[in-house]
Amino acid sequence: MSESNDEPFQLAAEAAAAIAGQTGVESHDIALVLGSGWGEAAELIGETTHTLDAATIPGFHSSAVVGHTGTIRSILTPAGQRVLVLGARTHFYEGRGVRAVVHGVRTAAAAGCSTLVLTNGCGGLNEAWAPGTPVLISDHLNLTATSPLEGATFVDLTDLYSARLRAIAREVDPELDEGVYAQFTGPHYETPAEVQYARRIGADLVGMSTALEAIAARHAGMEVFGVSLVTNLAAGISPVPLSHAEVIEAGQAAGPRISKLLAEIVGRI
View 1 (cartoon, rainbow, N blue to C red):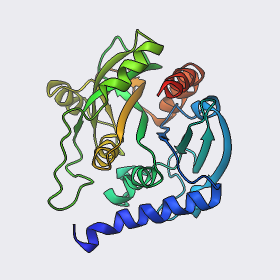
View 2: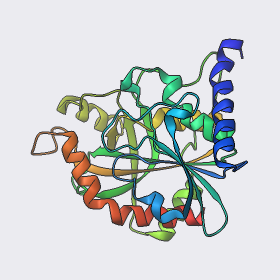
View 3: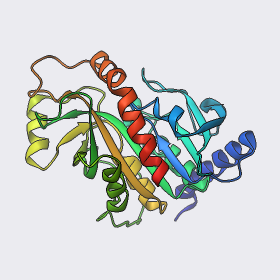
């Protein structure tokens, strides 16, 4: 790996060192990225011992999206595990580059996390999934035309989304469905034709995050668990125009239920 390709990992190491310095917590076990609708889960996982302003950590920025916090939290679970909650997600459409998109994931790995939990709010392609339905991610389609990996870096993604962790989730709620998540670039919502294209190539869910982060996590050796909150039916399936306000509203309505679900799952990891 060239010196320039080392830069994102050096920055992640600096960020992890800053988190350890500000929290006094030498190592974390699980990283949690909370997307639209999932924010309340942090309160249920355990005791928040430290809340950091993400902008004070190398490589992080304040969140540019309504519904996302700009903090990094260290939580102590009842079982004694340390959870690093990354509330300052950078989206691909913000134009900061792919390195910035996956910086949080790489920082979590550098901070000692062996498991990554990715959540998001998304559009559903299955009419049976009403807004507010949580769906496990079994696989993804990366439709961003880019990768967080640079140079001749070859990583097997056959079992990217852990079957073991999905089985744990089903122990908590046996009725959880699963599906394939397609990441588009955004920030515009998909057209009805793009939604039909995604459906025909195997997608069940569409959104603007997660896939690039999951790839970076696998490269870092982390076990990945992904779960989406269907906040709306996708374009052409939904009978009404799409809006970010609708996403926020659906997330708020489902928040208590899905947060409890996620906290129970994390408690069993």
